[in-house]
Image 1 (cartoon, rainbow, N blue to C red):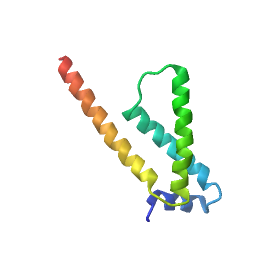
Image 2: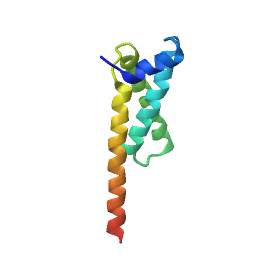
Image 3: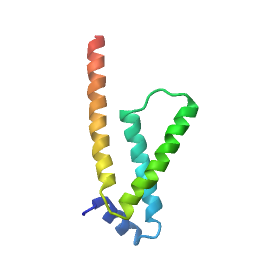
Image 4: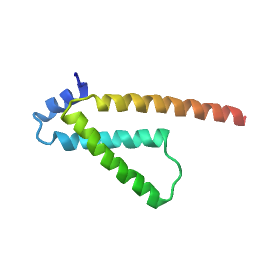
Length: 100
């Protein structure tokens, strides 16, 4: 499999020493953005913390797919974020048009 981002990150860092933690952070940021764009609701602070802790645990497994199996998870998350952002923008435009 060809993972474009994986190859670029390894090339920039000059090796795969701390590659797992780099991808862990990148995956978590992208997962959090996707969650906020598509699924987030207004929750109490305790439940919000619980959701993000579960997101961290799931992100650990996702990072294994990225680093060990070299699957294009970051690229997939990028597409998901793009689609959700377009959806949210169109929903915002539609709601603002309905108010007028």
